[in-house]
Length: 354
Image (cartoon, rainbow, N blue to C red):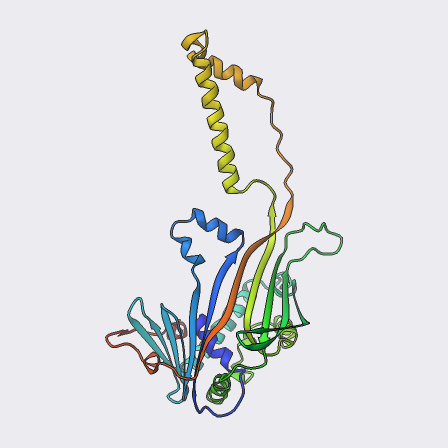
């Protein structure tokens, strides 16, 4: 799905005709948060801490987005999109015409499902807009900074979901995502990416018609919410050079998993030491016979009261994304499927058949 979104994203670009080569890389790394700490107890999850880098390159009428595991090659002249899986050594191809047909089929399937649901529940409760509780704001701070030789401006986007309604305690569970972006007006050579978007827009113009617009799949109130959000996000002008994304939420206060384990170990060691001391007392081994010594010890222990549970804000995840390796030359081999790879059916074609 991420690869499909790449195609939709380039439709909003604009510029001059494609004439040269250009490439750049984006690296994302998780830098903190409670979710990162939890991975210490999950086998094989350590790779989440490893930086993830993908490269975007344009050459003539082609664009490729690739990383170590996969690649998406878009050929605007041949009107094809090819997805390559380097691990499985396979690839799938879909034409622009087939992509349009698949989206039409998906839209028809959704309409049928909605009609069937309406027929089964004629007196159903009013539908709730899932985006109604989401609030997005963009703040241009006025701060500037030179990053990797590029003049950038700071924009802070805040997206809050399920904030505390009026009259409720401030500890009402909510999630907030903040994107701190340093954006450059342009990048040297980035006009080639912009130009590729123009060519793609001309080839995929049907997606801009009311009948093919993906937003038509949603209800009018949802589409209105998305339009409002898009208008706010349009205040972020430029290309993100360095971004810090922070996700926060609410969690119950109390010891962490590591602290709880440490406390349990201390308690166990204390009980073992007490038992050993009783066993070596003047009563000899009688202290432990039948558990009499342990029972007496447990009876003397005061009853513990459960601590009240409160919610407190925590950082769930923090990650950084930055642009690097701008180049005016590209590796031509990245625009071709490696020799020996097996062709399989594209996922969007499968969806159109359902």
